[in-house]
Length: 300
Image 1 (tube, rainbow, N blue to C red):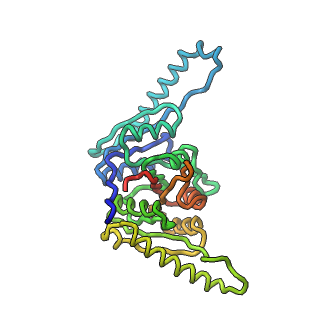
Image 2: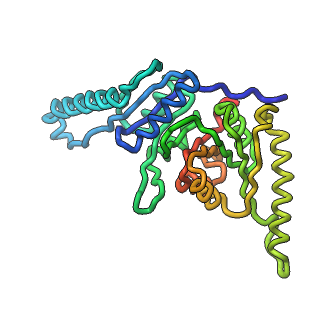
Image 3: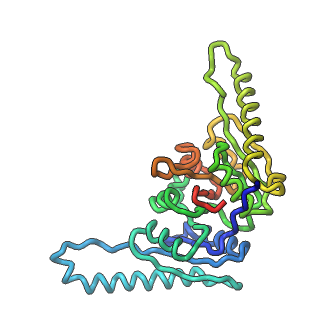
């Protein structure tokens, strides 16, 4: 029996630190909210101020409270200014306090958000993304999909690439991507290596060909058992490449920066590890594409 497709989110949570790095994420969040006719919750978090010694806390208590209230009002004013947009869209603003990731996750739960959208910082000198602790925490603990935005949102995603190791987690990622973006072309990407260690005298080309044949067989079995609706399966093309997944996807992102890359995640021994382990972490850090992380708790 085909598994039901996950519904499009009824609410999206856009998490911003009010810096320019989140402007592109806001544009994407607005576009997705309109596309899915979803409610948009825009949120920023005011972190705790400096910690004073107990002897000074009483004397400074009033000042600290005033500073906190001013910070909250300033954050709310800036968020309202950023969201001064045209068009009808159910939208609300939320100002959190305390540790950032914890506040975002609490808001996600209380608002019933089905997707978190945020941006990342970029180290221009190294031309690579530097994931902050907040994005790291959200990637590890968010119970709903997390969309990490890097590029300008000029239109809905037209090309969606799902990185797969043919596991149940990647099957969920494929079903979710197909349901969220029904008009996009789907690419199932798998990076394969030699199926067995190189032996003395073995022709590397033969070993690589064997690896491709094995990957093709596994991909066909995966699609057959993925419980993907037939209409969605017809949109899927296979991209099987030999080599390191993060290197291959980085090259792909340079040629196709507008594609969305989708990764499944899975929990191991109580910790949330990315689907491809350290390889997926490199993909998340190095790719130029927007990345959608699908946790195992996502509805399927």
